[in-house]
Length: 420
Image 1: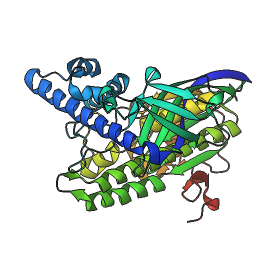
Image 2: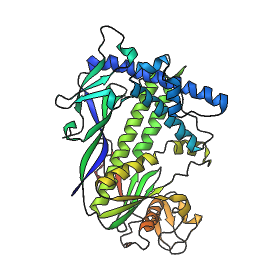
Image 3: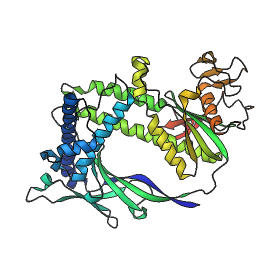
Image 4: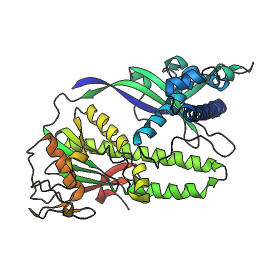
């Protein structure tokens, strides 16, 4: 085994929440106000000279603005950096139908935004599990107010403390919709195998099936039922609670809850994919990267909405860092150029007609019958190993092992173990 330093986020519950929530609320509201000021500034500059200012330009424009001093200077910088990053992400999509980042509002009130403290803005006491968070200059003006927020906390991960980490880079206060919690972004050492496996695996990412994995003699299918059910449920709940002046507080809470559930799903899914690859002696994973799928193509109103909510980049990054912990390499394979969905993994014949219907691939040339997503995954695998060993005698491409997200446990398990 060898040691490797990685960056991880540890979540912690605030044990003195009643004592600090008012201060955290005021900072969360201030972060939303600063975001909105930055958003207004971008619109003004954009309309005047046709240029979208980046994060550094925003900080330069607003550092003397009164609201900038509501937060610690590094915290204010981070709010404007997030706004700048959001505009860059929107612009790179090249989708004329996608709206740019909007204002943060909840009816007549600002919602509670995440507040980030960098190294100069916090002081950590790991012996007593306390962290001191610096207030902004404007928040210190009351003669009775402390210059900092002192939070007691308990790390939520089992058998994990901050004593064992190399360093804590940032602390984030995150509103969950019901309470505040702390996220510590840490550098920590992990043990990784010195000799990873010799096999290769192909992974195809999708919407109906979130992932399809092929190791040659073993195939796995990860349906996205739980994720799609959540998207449908929360979309209807949000519409029902929409306020006259924008999203209501309840709609904002539902969006945050949906985002947390999606993030947990993607973590659980990526963890299981990597664990299954390690069990099957995989040393390299080839993952299809559909990065151009949003580049101006019109998939219809319903299709465009589903693509907009497809978090393939997040899932891919989760797979990458979890694989890194186990010494497994990950290679991103551009899907468009290879036409992995149309090409038969057995004989190489390319034909749109081979995809008989959603989920079924039948090659007219060699008569291979396969799940279409697994056919694509096997093509991914061949990009790493041009002549991969495989055993099709068990019909694994047509009848894969299905692994489902179990809502009762929050984990991924074989289909037969998940109670409907």
